Length: 441
Ligand code: GLU
Image (cartoon, rainbow, N blue to C red; front, side, top):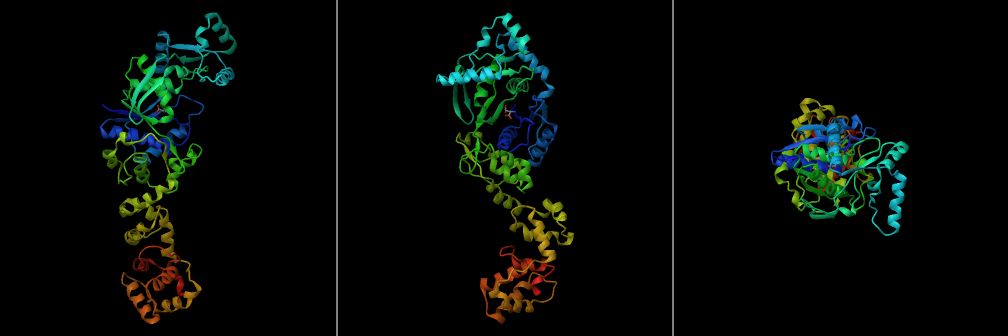
């Protein structure tokens, strides 16, 4: 059975980049009736915050990406200690005592000599007495996994055949001097013990994957199928990393983006398939095909989310938005007609407030000086309310007869005088909703 996981670290809010990872893993699981695990990577007690765990869940809920179960790495530390012990006994785990400064110096020297900055394994040769001395002097060492220096190969679901020379990669640190287990080990243990079959993550993890494949094998497991999606860039190809903070899911939500707009875009962006607006997460499942995604950086333009959101809104019935319409202050007997009139004219749902204000309080008229005379004449001909769907047609016919104006020269000054805007719903629909007409003077 297919098992996937989304494994955020609760050190911040999730953003569009994380969403891509979450969505792909979710869709793979759902497509095959498998399990989607939300794994909280919280082995770093200083940076992990409960508030972010809650926020991640809330954001996924809002998106409609429901998980089958939650796992927390902080509750599995004994499993990681056991795996570490196994690796130690196999001679694949060794203690090192270099300080960050010493490591930095080594790297600089290597780079100066034109060599790749790979850890030189000096700690492997430390005699026990020397280790004892260092431990007494510097405290517990950190622990590295000893890579087998062979080529590590896999067929990546997106990148195709990958081959990485383990000799070009530093032996990864899995446990810090203060005893903290690092993600690389925790992830390997979890993926193996939880039977994870498919891992999709960002291409910044490709080197991790190489080392993790060796670790999984060393621990007697079978590596899952890996796929690495390309990183998102801004519309000009610029790095997004600095801006991801403002592209958090909750930020986009606050800006009125509809979840299905976001999901529909992210399920296709960077693939050879066109973006198609879908009405539900379930509808995204069938068309999803990880092999259609390319390895080139994917351009993401948040502005694309707004026309898609507008289209989502156009398709919604009153029932789907009723609480929001109520909150805007629209009386129940006007809610249906109000929604049908405005839904084609809004980009985000929050714009209903402005429209209801306009209908209920009337708009500040916008009248070009050239049209002042004409508007005054027209207003004198406008019958007293209540108006109905026929009022606009009858009225403008009379105005046309009286003034000789027609077409846009007739309609536009009236629209602007009544609504203060040059665009909006059909005026024959607007007029019956308009409760105050300030242009009457
Ligand atoms: N916590 C890791 C991250 O957010 C998970 C990476 C993985 O999917 O293995 O980058």
